[in-house]
Length: 318
Image 1 (tube, rainbow, N blue to C red):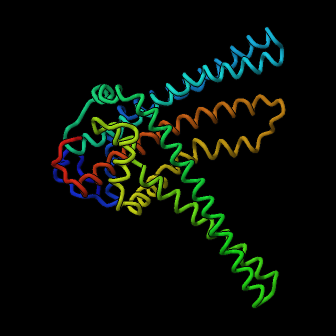
Image 2 (image 1 turned 120 degrees about the vertical axis):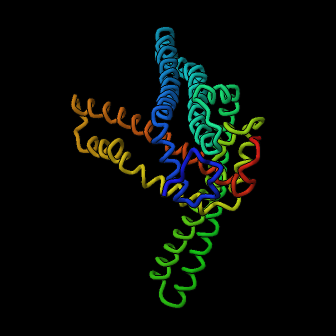
Image 3 (image 1 turned 90 degrees about the horizontal axis):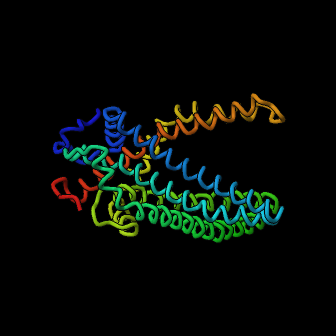
């Protein structure tokens, strides 16, 4: 049963199914607003990418006119540096506008609805913090991957080597080597996946925190997300899996099927291939726009649920 969104003060802590259902209800009731924000956010990101490519092309062309091949390379590198400004600004706008959807979802649940314009005005001054948050999250995920990969290599490799040695002595060397290798790979992969899932779950709502709670910075919003999700790892994973299953039909139409068609078509000088490639890109962007509000609504509802469990619903926003 989908919780009633307007009467938020009557909603207690939610189970994972309620979280996804409430997010879907919010998405349905505010479809136009959420889609407008998603389209605008995507256009900013695409604009940043195109701005970077345009800067590279202009500087590379200018460099080629002055110094042939070497000038083109140097010009392209210079253009990349200049184009990074456009890319970073577009990415920050994408991140901020996406988080507005989560903020609107939360405000609706606590019975303090905002317009998209009011929410954007609240979020706009923190644009630099959203850019910093994206950078910090990237560093956190890269660090988590490297640390877990090293741990997986050491522990998985050690367990596999020990198992292979024991089984080789007890049974025979080929069987021991195969079983030891399989055990090492499985253990290593499990360590890698569990660590990444754990870190991603703890930081899952960081951008929603930054969009909702006043006075937060990029670093403090990550700490706040870490605090709120402390005892909710498995619940977050159930919510994540349910949301992923809901979006699979959309991804099948906008991503998977066009990608399969591209693989089946010949590439050499075929206008049909180029047309399908363009359509595939456009469908992929459309799918991203449709899915983005769902994920942000889920984050907004999840943030509401975590705060209701840990702090109660009567607390004022930070």
